[in-house]
Length: 114
Image (cartoon, one colour):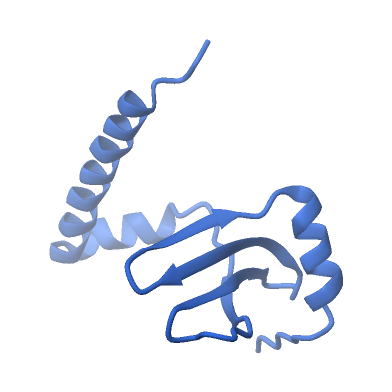
């Protein structure tokens, strides 16, 4: 069965609206803010590193990678983007391409969190 992307997007929009109302209430009421903070189930650091790839015609187009690095310094995901004078697009790398990017760039960048 195919998921209904329009219905899913509507559901996500409704949920976001509900969450934003909750956040606004927490901004206005210290008790609600404390309750929110106390009930957060966890957090994770994810850093996006942008790599600008070399281009023979940077005035005509640029492309690059967004590398997503977790708090242990591992590349966990990546997107490729392309922009020209009129438009742009971005796509997530599949598992095979992600492994190539990891093999190439994993040791090129370090992350130190204190």
